[in-house]
Image: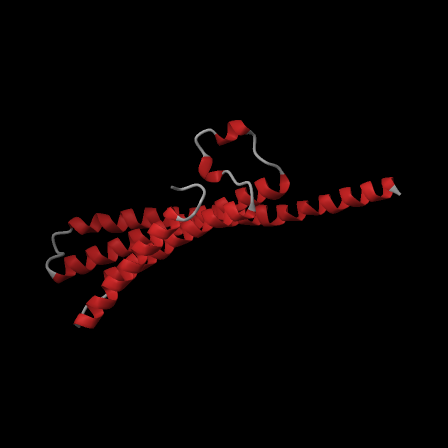
Length: 176
């Protein structure tokens, strides 16, 4: 009976390798998003070179500048998303398949996960940064027509500050 139980437990433990599907898919998606963001950077640089064009004056120059800054924020957003996918893949691998060697963690404590809670906390912090970048992107395009608009904008900034404070003060783990 003991040998059956041992083989059954080994079989159960082997099912953890199904997580490799998520790890490989996340790595592939991360690489694809890194590629997209890098292509966006190349396009952005070629676009920004037109900023020195003497025909751009006044409102046209300001609109071009705002559009360029919005593209920069979109590129940051792409790289952050790719980073989330990479962290997710590495975290799943380390938690379910095999912990990385201690030498692999030299200077890289941000990618050291002992539990799903560690992984969730790391992902939550990066997602918070993405949300902040998105808020910044919308703030660049926002027109503050009334004092209520300004008050709502100030409130959103205060809430972002509070979220950052809470994520760094009450995490109980890495990051503070």
